[in-house]
Image (cartoon, rainbow, N blue to C red; front, side, top):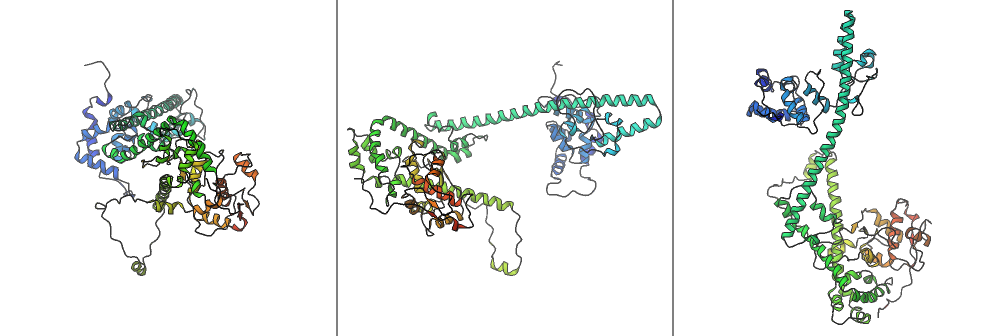
Length: 618
């Protein structure tokens, strides 16, 4: 026989472990005592246990228990009195030995004076509920003869050299009663030597017990750290395995490492970096989304490479395009110019790209002659694509709010139903749907007309994550025409543009977010501006785009150049952005300082230039 230590879970079990008494206890589980407990989950574990002992041999059942952690064996012992008598005895000591030996690091050894050391170790480590005793029943002398309740014991730190307990200490009731009864017996007997020997023994055992709890506290901290590290390592390993499996699938389709989106693209990496293994079903579900995002990242790289390759000619195009955008942008009837693409997106228009890449380098006059009259028509594919993406973001927010409302409705208590015959007659009963034959409806498709209808609602507003409050223009509370103007006026914040022809996946999901909506805010805004209900976002953008200075309010707490300089730090008196107007008016009317009940206090006036003929770009 080898001299090496054997695994406790593999050690030979003595036949006397499960004698006749134990077998009778196992098969007597159906004979419960007292009233039957109530509750939907009561008895389920006991029912499973009954099925096990009926269909599984006892030796196999105990072998199964030997692979459980101590906390599970402790919980199983609380299922019934019979199981408690079977599992909480010295005869089953090998079971606790195997379970405790499987812990890493192993717990400290239990004091020898315990009735069943391994059982007591598991109980003291994993059991947390104890009851104290009335202070009137305690005596000063007995406070040093037994340890306090486990929940009050020291957990860690240095070892205890002296028992320091008082009358207010909580003790474990059964243990206190045994010691108290024995102490009274020795006092009444008059045997001073026996009394002194017993008290000295109890003090020693109490001190040993307290120091044991100090060791248990240190072990508990080390065990929790080891468990956390093991779980974290397992989780990181699972995430890495899934990431490598997805990369292998994508590389087999012809993609490379540089085609994958950067780590800051949460939409892509939240799907990849999960701990669930990549099965064929999961891959079929996420494949389309991942490929669309990889193709979008490829398009971004191609756009960046084009801008770098043709940089001198694009600078010439910029010399024409930036003055073209700024000229007459705030005049009436020029909303189409405020929705034109940025330079990074304009060079993706086929006609513009053909001019840039032709054999002879074009001049500023060439761009003006070829594009001035056609730019509105050439930019329509850009507008359609951006409207599609903005509408998709808006619908996603609406679906998310609908799901949250359904969850709240399910959690709320069900309302009392009207059982009257009249109510039953008015509401016909619906036939139950067969879940097995129910087919999933295809995803609805929306054309550009439906997208425009959705975005023209002045309650639909957007914000930009890439831009912060220190930029010159607004970054929140933007209707869809002002969102396109925001891209135009902040090209450095969107250097690669927001439009990639031929890519169906939205490029705005990581940049633009939809603002929360409520029914009252659009109506308060229209009332403050004196506009009729039904005013569209384009009509409102047309009005705010003609503003010549800061708006004023009848409440006297809004408007003025000082407010603009304070908010945005722009000291240029000649610069004024139409994006400021809508954002600040909306926040003033619907902000936390506004008196929403008394709308008459907030009547806003926007200074605008007189109506003039649209300025020609010729």
